[in-house]
Amino acid sequence: MWKIIGNIIFYTLTYGIFLYSFLLFFSYLFIGWFSIIETKRYMRKNSFTDFRVLASSVHAPSVTIIAPAYNEGKTIVENVRSLLSIFYVNLEVIVVNDGSKDDCLQKMIDAYELEKVDFFVDYKIATKEVRGIYKSRNSVYHKLIVVDKVNGGKADALNVGINISSNNYLVCIDVDCILEQDALLKMVKPFLEQTAEERVIASGGVIRIANACEIEDGRLVKVRLTNEYLPRMQILEYIRAFILGRMAWSRLNGLMLISGAFGAFDKEIAIKAGGYNHNTVGEDMELVVRMRRYMEERDLKYRVTYIPDPLCWTEAPASFNILSRQRNRWTRGTIETLKFHKVMFFNPRYHLLGMLSYPYWFLFEMCAPGIEFMGFVVFLVLALLGILDWSFFLSYLLFIICFGYLYSAFAILMEVRTFNQYKRRTDIMKLLLTAATEPFYFHPFVVVSAVRGYIDYARKKKSWGEMTRQGFAQKKQHQG
Image (cartoon, rainbow, N blue to C red; front, side, top):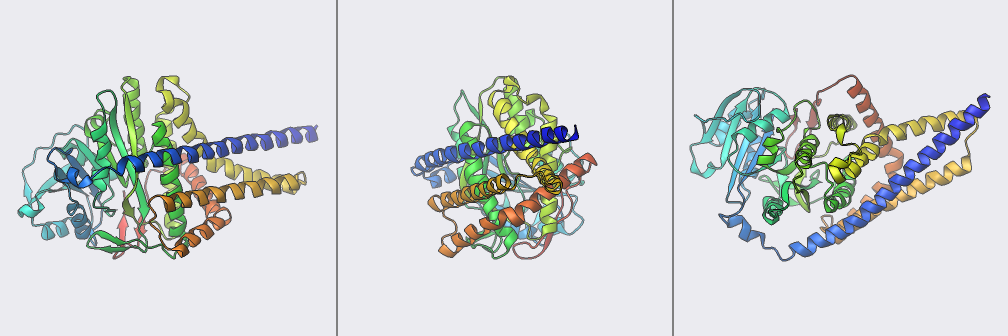
C-alpha cells in the first residue's frame, strides 16, 4: 500500500516538474526569438533619428525627473549635478528629501544656493507632510526644485514629486543612478510616436551595472567589467533580463515591470491610477500593473514600451548580505503586486495582460524559486529512499545546465552584436566563464534568498532593509 502511494507521489512529482520545465524552456525560446525581432526593428528604426534636434526643440514633451533621496549627504551634490547636466529644454528636476537624518538637505542648500519658497502643493495623491520647498537664487539652477518632507518611504516620496511636478511626463529614478546624456531623448521618443488610437502610458529603459566603471562629475566616461564575482554575475543577469526578456515582452505589449531605477510615465494616467502604492516594497512593478489595469478596465488602447539602449547605470550589491536583502525584497514585491491584482489571473477581460503576462509572472517569476527549492528537497528524499532513477536524473540535470549556459551565451552574443558595451575579448570570456558557474554557486543562493522572501512575506515584513553600498566615490547608505 505504502509502496503504491510512494510510486504515485514519485511519478506525479517527476512528470509535474518535467512539464513545468518544458513550459519554462519553451518560454525562453519564445522570448529569445521575439527579442531578436524586436531588437532588429528598434535599431533599424532609430538609425535614422537625430536626437539632438529633439533635445533643443521647445516642442519636445515636457518632462519632470523625480529623484527620492534618503541619507545621501555624502554624494547628493554630485548626484544632483549629474541630473542637471542632462541636455533637455523642457525639463524640471525634483529632488525629494525623504526625512533624511544626515546633512543631505543642507548640502543641497549650500551647493545650489537654495532658499525656501512659497509653493502651492496640489495633493492629488495623499502623502506625508511636506515641510518645505526650495528653489535656487542662481538662475543657472532654475530647473531644480528640492522638497523636504516627513519620512514616508520611497513610494511616498515619489508621490510627493508627482503632486509638485508641472510637466506632462514623469521620469522616476534612483538619485544615485548615472544617466546617459541622451537618456531622456530616447525615453520620450515613444510618447512622441503615440497615436490618437493608442496611448503610450509608460516607457522603461535598460539598467546597466556601473561597478568598476569610471565616473567623473556625475558622468560615465568609461565602461569597465568588474573583477568582483557578484557584480559580474549580476551584469550577466541584467543583460539576459533587459536585452532578451523585456524586449520580447515589449513587442507583445505585455510588459508588467519597469525598473524603479529609471522609468517614464504619463502623468495623467499615473495620477488617475492612484500613484505609487506605499503598502508594497515593489512599488515600481505595482504602479505599472495598476496603470495597465486602469486602461484595460476602460477599454482604452495603450502601450507600455521599452528602450534597449544602455540609458542608466547603477551600482550592484557586491556582498551576499546586501544581495540577499535585495532578492528577498524583489520576491515580496512580486507576491504583493500579484496578490493586489489577482482578479486578472487568466481573466479574458484583461486580454494579453490577464491571459499571458500575469500567468507568466505568477508561474515562472513568483513560483519558480519555490518549485526549484521543492524539487531539491524531493531529490534528497528520493535519493535517501533509494528510488531515484540516477541515469534519468543526471541526463536531465545535464540538459538543464547546458540549456541555461547556452541561453546566457546567446544573451552575451546579442549584447556584442548590438550595443557592445564590453569591447575587450577578455571581458566576453570572463562573462562566459561566469555563466558556467551560475548553476552551482550563484543561482542556488538566489533561490534561497527568494524562499526567505516567501517566509518574510508570510511574517508580514514590510521594510526594505538597510542597503549599504560602496558608492561610485564614497560609501553611502540607502533606505526606502
